[in-house]
Image 1: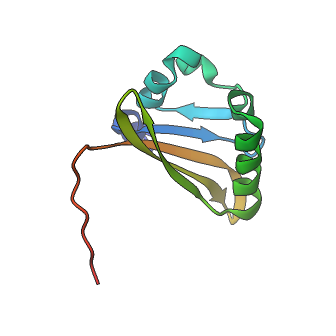
Image 2: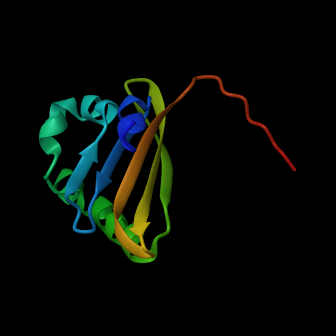
Length: 113
């Protein structure tokens, strides 16, 4: 099994960019999520071109500070959590990873101390 094989079948959307914002990986779910924007044809495109100025600034901050950006959205009645974080190699920031995961309508919340 190739290291990236599991990402193709992962039920959430995974998008990975290089440090310049060029999209270098989309799993199948991400291609479906971004179908109207071009799906797999987004590979090689810059993620900044897909976002508004305030989002481009957030991406810059994530890459500069390595602090993740986490929030929830709702589209067409489906809630999702978006987790954006820098990825590193050898201690150096190399790009951005975005995970988009559907949140079930009812979900237990556990507090573990």
